[in-house]
Image 1 (spheres, rainbow, N blue to C red):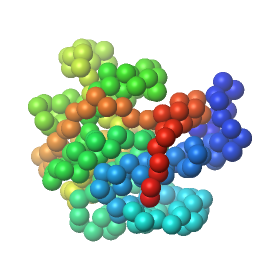
Image 2: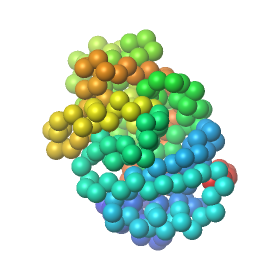
Image 3: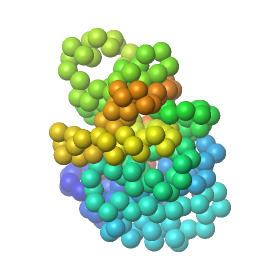
Image 4: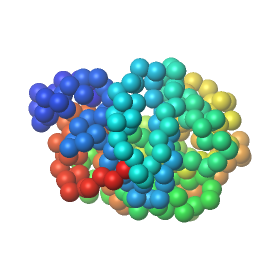
Amino acid sequence: MRRADQGATVSGAQADVAATGVKALIPIGRAFLDYVLHAVAEAGLNRIGLVIGPEHDDIRKHYGSLALTRLHIDFIVQHEPRGTADAVLAAESWAAGEPFFVLNSDNYYPVSALRALAALDAPALVAFSRKGLLAEGQIDPSRIASFAVLDLQGDYLARIIEKPDPATLDSLGADLYVSMNCWRFDARIFDACRAVPLSPRGELELPLAVQHAMTAGRMRVRAIRTDEAVLDLSSRADIASVAKRLEGVEVRL
């Protein structure tokens, strides 16, 4: 998001926030994360823990300035950017032993998928079909090709495959599902986040922690398959297309 893109259609205010790298606050009428949290509220969830870095005062100020009627927001500090598994681990005391969701702050998820996840009483994720993501047209096919592929066995997740080779893709068939980091967990995930080794990228990564827990027989993960799309705000080139698709969404927090 920090990288300049002469071909991207962005306003001066959007470019200023993009330069900070805080994608959640990109203004699209209002902060992009407001839309994400509106969808969460529409799904019936109301207690939010935002995992932020120590330097993210702008996020604190933004939500401190809003009159929230549907949500209660807490701030959880991840002291070092050590990866997504470490971010989840930072929320252990906040979760207080209760089930919880893990979502990206730069993805706008369909409300129906969030409701389906909330209706379960076990660890689960939403499995998004490639054809559904492509049908919406907001995410470039080359980007979808880089997403983690899900090996699903019936209603359960068997494997998470990062950067699969062509032979692996062929073995999974044409109807592929990918992860967009839309999860429901219970307290078992924290032990997995503590135990997972560093990834080849030098981070503690949540998909590897989930795979570790499944391989050890400590957790089964349900899969909710959907052909619905996700809006992905990864770069400046995404801002205009995401803004177009969010037109008419009346945010209520």
